[in-house]
Length: 185
Image (cartoon, rainbow, N blue to C red; front, side, top):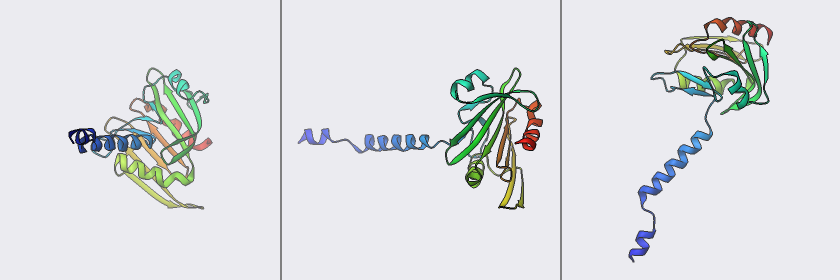
């Protein structure tokens, strides 16, 4: 009966195959943020597949249905509408580009129903925020949270505005655009 025993898979390869499928399934549910994650050395390197430093042309190739625009500050920008990352649905995502540094600002508006899921993802990936403020809004309680990360990125979450803003390590000149977009969007 050597052929029966040798034709049946051993436990090792079966376990390895199951682990691969489990990891592959996890990759299919990748959240919108990519970076260091899990608190040890958190950083954000990309958002919905667009990395800091990427050129406008590259983003247009990834999202051909988006629209180029000019930011309130005057920077080149690219708007994508109705995209999802994991459990979070974004009604719009604007990528802004710093001259000579590529994409350096993400301004994302999310569905209010995604607020709790997004905050959980941020806390899971980046740890507790450096500042948090809560308040009572007309429709629901609001949460504002911010993170300053070791590689120079900053993340601002505001459930009252249904907004996530991520400033890249070379995006300092674009910081005012966050406030200006908050006023007009």
